[in-house]
Length: 224
Image 1: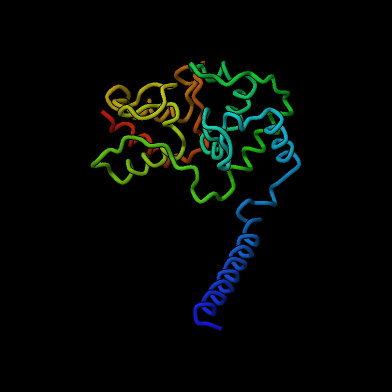
Image 2: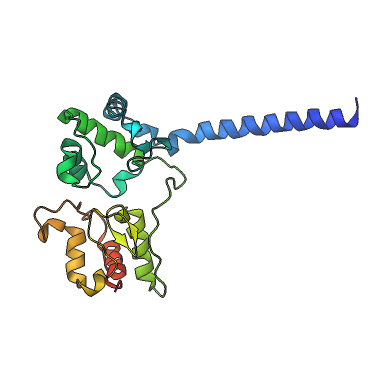
């Protein structure tokens, strides 16, 4: 056997062993990463509802689907159950944007199943995918404000609000919100938007800890 042939065979066998080991390791870790223990009948029914209405035509989830509408892999990070139920029941009423999701006239059970499915997907370890939306980076921030900026990104706030020309336009532009609103007002708006406007479509972030809300307030109040 020639030296080159021996190197080829050994290299192929070694590569195969490494591949099989990594495959086995991934399979063993998958139940924990997908929190398989929480895969209930309601979650499965929500997946069937997702497929029934071809939601992937517009939305991406776990890297699969269209890019016409927002990626919903981690939508439960910044939308609570109440908001999702209201939105799926009547999208146009909750999100009065120019480009609207059609009203699919879902049954209440289908809505509940979809929310359960999205909640389960949110808990999957996706190695930080999808990436967080870009926002305008502000220099000379305090540590508290820097953490607030990170939370602003991770909670999906830029999907609706624009800062420095970056972000959505469903909600108000926050580029200079610190010069228009005081900290108390901003804090209350984050905790319970309907305090200032009973018809507000902004979801409540009351489930976010008081410390984290305070950090977001610190960040936004410094935008002037």
